[in-house]
Length: 241
Image (cartoon, rainbow, N blue to C red; front, side, top):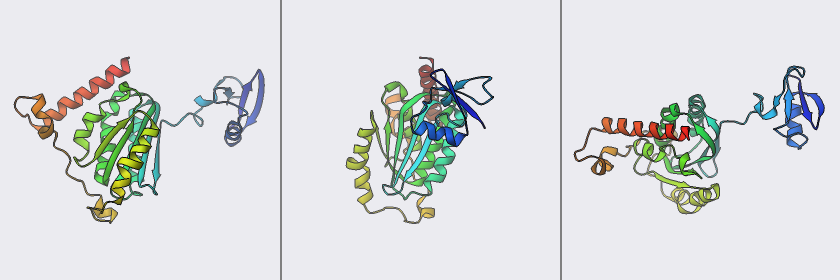
């Protein structure tokens, strides 16, 4: 692929993808400069080119701290979260039981309504792999797409869940008040990954929240349906703002 770039009225190039990345790294061009991949017939911003568009999500493993980091940015579709779930599944095989999970929503602009089931799958995967603490970075209240409610169904009642407004605060929580201490505690589960990654008993939401929502306890499936509908309404409302 030959790429030409416009800067200050001058045309530069052609560059290969690797060469243009190098020029971006040294600051010669900015992601907002216009580029062409069809011999200058049409132009678009560099950051809109398929090979240069920002990633919708990132999944990283910090083995030293036994920590999984998931971050989202921009507008997220169902396909994005499904692909994220696949990467999370692979990443979990590199972590020990009682790991920490840090989820960064600070650069999220919008998450599609259809993402709820894929988000729930990620929660289930982490719960079954033995997550001990979940810390979410959510700077703005409207970015909380019903995650607290979903957590009732998809995390065990022994999982610590914290929400904060900045990455600095999240790292303090992980390093001081929760994950560091947990890592020092004796493991209550087998050390073998294969044995340790058995599903744990999740919290029973019908027992935990029914008393304040219904005069008589409904079945868990009905409550689950009601709350999922609430989550979807919340996501739709946020999307329309």
